[in-house]
Length: 554
Image 1 (cartoon, helix red, strand yellow):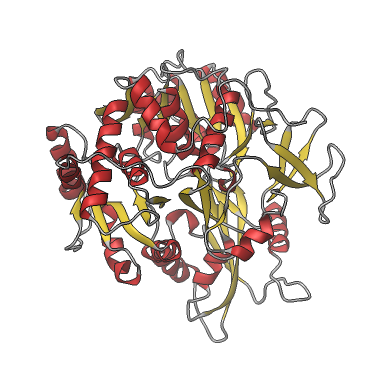
Image 2 (cartoon, rainbow, N blue to C red):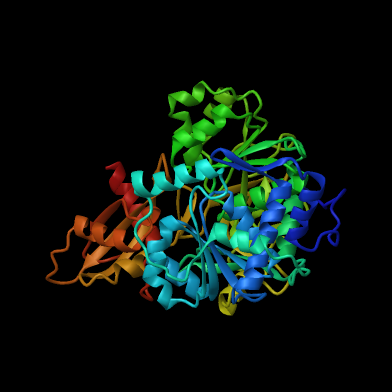
């Protein structure tokens, strides 16, 4: 039986994500919206600055409604300003991982047909390398300290460039400075026209992995995001109230869950988001937890484990903490137990995927079953089916199918891929294997067959293999994930050298660093004479995983 959305949710009440910001500016205008470093923007300021950015985009650029604009930023105040400004200008936002290599940037920008980009100066040297291969016409560059106080802005920006050497030299002569863009927009007096897109129009394209090949763009509409926000809100109201919460934001905003939480759900609720630009810098995470009355914290198993291993964490006052959430990768039982013992706050595990905006299920105080990812959200149908698409009995393992208002429109310009995962009657085939008990709790048994999950990031084996196979001394290769206490999984590569080649592990690792983001790099590389294959020649990664597990036990 599907729980229905009730109470304040009216499917026709809101038509655009922009109405979330308008509501926040009207009802919570003077309340803090986003804090980063030492600066805070209230909701009225976010609304005003995003207006300024939208006016700049409309009056001073070649971008037209419906064009795609990439946002390649870490968790900075500029992120929500740029996103809401782009949406106000009628553009479609393409969230981009700041860690991408030039090769990965090229693929995403070309695939999305991006016409503009907002990018941190730290990454501009990579953009310079591939810009000519894309359709990007408008480049807007921001720096770490932008939107801070004038003195702090200068200290942060100079420190990043000259002391920490975080900004490699680059040349983008036609680029516009973000702060100058805001000034030019603010000088425009004309009112902004009504948004060009709403309802089932695409608001966001998020890139996600499949089991093979390059990442695909998931098209999420305004209705998708609004529905999932309301679904999540209905489940979380037990522990997240309106207008009073201080939610720490270490997960990157380009990620589907962090985007929904910090850029949609928390603004709707008028809550305060503490943005943490680099969650790998544990000192900065601990500082936010130490110096502020944080009431909510959402992370992944890797982050919770790392914090548990730091002595400073035990000295933090967690008495205000009412909500901790986990997703993106399985939550270890010992991490869950130790975190609650240390903080007094349980971790509520959930499950989602980018194609579902992303939340599908989550535990809550009144419905919490550790070891599961909770009950499906309201208005969400789920099925567990066998290879023939037939429902299996309660408790049996099968593939999870999902149907609800949060399910994506389609993959961007990939009709065949869309047909493979979306049925005609609206069921999304997750590719994840689960059991559902008689009470409806979902337990994840296995992920998509070959996906590797490193610190919450989806790593596509086929992408690694395609790149490795471009090495002149590699005949073929296969990437698998192996368990790791800290990252969830590590990438292990099996490679077959070409005859007469003397290629060694370190040389191939160095090659990988040139074209793969850090979390995709193989931790170990094994050279073998041949790879296990099926009768039709398909590489059997499952056999490699089994062989690796057996050799590890010996």
